[in-house]
Amino acid sequence: MTLMEMAQRGQETPLFTLVARNEQINVQLLMERVAAGRIVIPYNGHHKPQKPQGFGLGLSTKVSASIGLAADEDSLTDELFKVDEAIRAGTNAIMDLSTAGNMDEARRTIIKRVPLPLGTLPVYQAFAEAVCTKGSALALEPEDFFKIMERQAADGVDFMALHSALHSGLFKTAKADQRVLNLVSRGGSLLMGWMLYHGKDNFLYTMFDRILEIAQKYEVTLSLADAMRPGAGADSLCRSQAEELVVLGELVKRSRQAGVQIMIKGPGHTPPNQIATTVKLEKQVCQGAPYFVFGPVSTDVAPGYDEITAAIGGAMAGAAGADILCYVTPAEHIGYPDAQDVYRGVVAARIAAHVADLAKGYPGAVNWDLKMSQARREQNIEAQKTLALDRERLTGFQSGEKPFCKKCKNACAMAVAGEFFQELPWEC
Image (cartoon, rainbow, N blue to C red; front, side, top):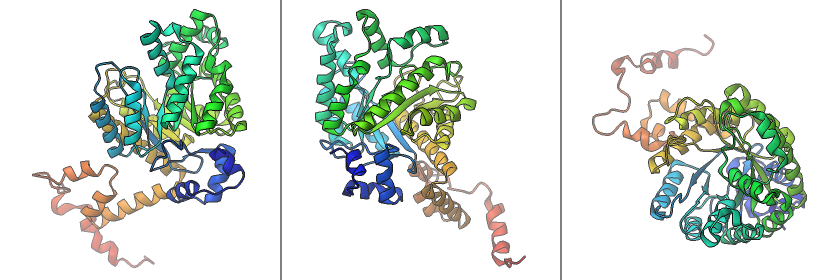
């Protein structure tokens, strides 16, 4: 049985107990939400991540970081260093989005290294291998894709991103939308090219039952991505994006009927006044499926600082009900991220996730802030270091000639007023 089916039958497992304890939630409530599809726990038995994570209703907002080989000459050692930096920065999941090189070796090495849920986008490898073995991505056969999907699942991939809601009927709508940026999804554009060349519909859509069979066999959580996600704020909530969301809602229902865990991924660039609406629309149309948001990037004018624009959008999306934030690095839109970009991207997304948890009233987040405030009141530097979201950065301010907090010297507001307020009777 899958985890969803076990939850539906009320079979409590050590995995459910562990996730519930980590999330400070009643295990029975957790199981009820897994059974209903409102919470997913990506956990492939061929990987068995040592630090399993739950995504969804009532749980803390999570962060995912993406790495991967982008060219044949890319170094796997460099990508593994990025993995280590993402984990050091506190990510909750890793995605291997390799599009070149020895993708099997990279994935298997990364899976062994990562104690967290590991995700992939298998269509990347399918098209890349078609180029290598058949001379063209257009020569890909659907069966080629399913062999790769099963190979990745057998390796232990915990969740997979798939553009299964993209279908030919969306092309006419997308063209009529006259979007500023047409199709920014790499996987979506590869599939669209294949569909137009062959005059066929998307096999990830027409053969969705095959996807469910593999996902059920290996306990792979599906992460259905929107190919029509907006790549510019001006394209947010266009008709093609909304139509694709309706199809995603249908696929959510089919997945749950098959006992397969599923979440939805989107939306991309979204202006602040549309973020909450976008999240609520996904929750309504997709029957409360966990929402894995890319950013969302809240403004288009700050290249080089998109970890900030995405953190702003991520905090707003999380507060509105989004469950996982896919990090965005400073290199977004301008280059390929290095290890430092990865670290900064994860930290920025974690800040956004924590702000979202405060807005949601998540007990762990509220208590964390309270403890930090108390440590500041007591001027307890060591406690502040322990509680800091990025402890290493805080520690750096105390090293060398940079005292931790001396800018006010003898005029520190808390020190001057501290004795008075401690002596003040409460009835005053």
